[in-house]
Length: 246
Image 1: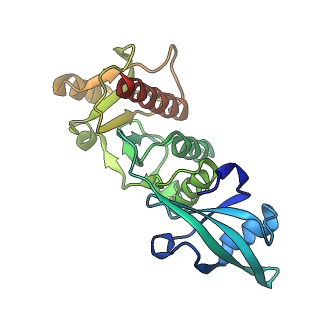
Image 2: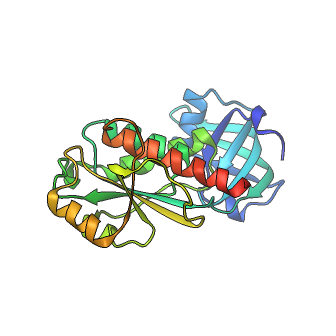
C-alpha cells in the first residue's frame, strides 16, 4: 500500500471487507459531504478508508457527482491491509464527567487506543445517564479513529454497576492510595476502574479492600475524571509496550 503520508483524508466505509483492489465504489452521505466541503478532497486525491473492524485501505477519488449538498464520491480501491486488535485489550469503566469534558475524554481515549468504554455507576456519581447522548459518543469515537488512523473502533458498552465491575478478574482500581506504578500488566486484557470526582464511597472502599482488587496510583495529585482516565490508559499501554520488548 502507498505511504499514508500522501493521504488527503480518511473516510469510514463499512463495506471495506468485501471490496477488492481495483474496484470502484461510491461513498455518499455525511462522509462524502465532510470530505469534500470541509477537507477539500477533490478528484485525483488519495484517500484512506477505514471500516472500524480491523481493515485500512487506500484509494483514489475518480469522480465527484451529485448536488453540492448531497455529493457522491467514486473511489478506486488501490490497496487493503488487515490488522489484529492491539494487546492488551484495554477497557475503561469510568464515572461520567460533566459537560463537554465527557466528549473530550472519549476523543482522547480513542486516540490512545482504548478498545472499550463503559459508564461506571458509583454511589457518588453526579452525572445522570439520561443526560448522555450515546450516538454522539459513537460519532466522536469514529472521528477520532479517522484522525489517528486506528483500524478498530473503540466500543461504547452498556453502563456497569461498581459491584459488578469490581469482580472482573482483570480490574485495576485507579486511586491515590494505590501502588505508585503499574508493573506486570496482564498482556491480554486490562480493565481500568475510574471513580467519580467525589471519590469512592466508604462502602465502595470496603468492597475494594475485601475483594483484594489491585489498586494503582496514576499521578502525583488528585485528578479530574477525564485526566485520570486518559493518564491511566496511557501509562498502562506504555507499560505493556515496554514489557513486550523485554
